[in-house]
Image (cartoon, rainbow, N blue to C red; front, side, top):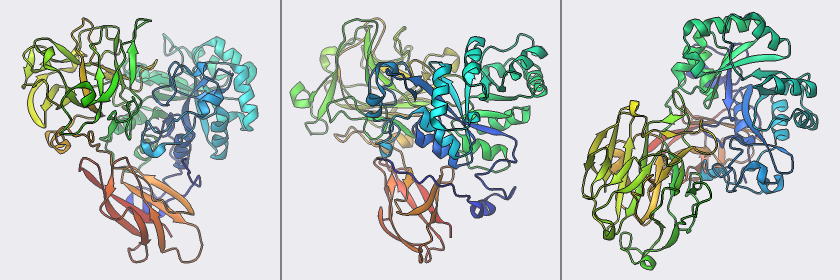
Length: 605
């Protein structure tokens, strides 16, 4: 189980040294006048819509967390972004409403983000409200199943001040229901925008009923600067604030603040507060990470270290074509680098079937599409399939068009009449597909084999990211709309949220019975017992600790908690003598693929 210290520690000394613009605490933004709303909690680094993600945001001075709320089978409000399918973030199946809360509580909700978070539980809304009360903060609710009376019941049960609960309201009917049940709670207008932004009554009618914020989508911003400026002015004149969602680009966040927006909803709330409030965060977004890793050694769809479970795509109620697991000798195919290991046999899918992969990318600039990513797969295809097109990648999650990446009848890899390389059948290969927004780069067994132009205007290869809905946060493998498929075998699969370089592809090496090495190199905890607090600065790869006052605290036992597959250039457990090291220790964290970064543990006296 995950154990977290919930104390808040103000790291004044560090920020006095690191940021010369201001001397205010980095967990106190009260005089800034700008609000960063933590989208699903601190979801860039922690499992979304969990108490852990919410508390990590609150610990950093974030005063608003947006969370998604759905109703369990037995009528209990829980947190979940995907009410129709819980498989992306849990090891369960079906909709939230198909499962009792007792069933949901037994599910694993953290491991998909990183194996370190294994043991995180399905959260209750009532417990999230208690956290908001504890940290003098608020929950902004995206209520998937709206019930004013149930929200009232939860609020009373939590004992929280009514101002801690602020739902998004999209219709007048929902507004009336909410005000009847929770008259003292504020709310956000998240519905349609006025045809005429100068319509005074449109704003005042809502503010008089308790609206505190109008939230715009970035699409609304595209209506033009005059429309946006007028809207913001009118909202302010009526006594309300204006937020915009969901924005993760640091420069865009500053731009919106300069336009007059009062806040942004973001997966990077701490960076947003620092950026707008006069600090200078060292930003790198998105962090280059493995977001899914699978090797099938357990003969199932579970991820290995990071990632959601794979799942069968089955259109309508047609017959399911199942994936079969077995050893290479069982299937009568070549061993993987000389070893007889368990692999997955993918059937020759018909247009109604496929293998679905949740991408788990964080939203980058605009919209619900991501055009910069890498897919790596260890693949074997029998020579019986020579002379045909074989689909490898289908970015349409409903398989509604031609697939996007093939082996062609000549044994080359590509798409759009742009094929390269020589794929030998009856042999294991490591394929890497890289999309960088403008071109598709293809690698076969570590070697670059060619590039296909892929201008973004074609809108074909980008995949749905986490802003998409109804569980379509990803893509299909080995599917095609007109049966250009074949039975294939896969030894391992990996997904990264960025376009890999040729050097990074080389780091992967060739096909291995151990799967594909990940590149994640996070330090999640020092593992030091009895700390007053421990907080991670993800931008500068620093963990700040404050020990309890128990005498000589210079020499302490540690047990570093790392990303899956990572190691360090110092022992991962032992003793730190902070006195000898001037209060800090710096070392390398090395990912399984050999890439590394420096991390520092800073002891605050």
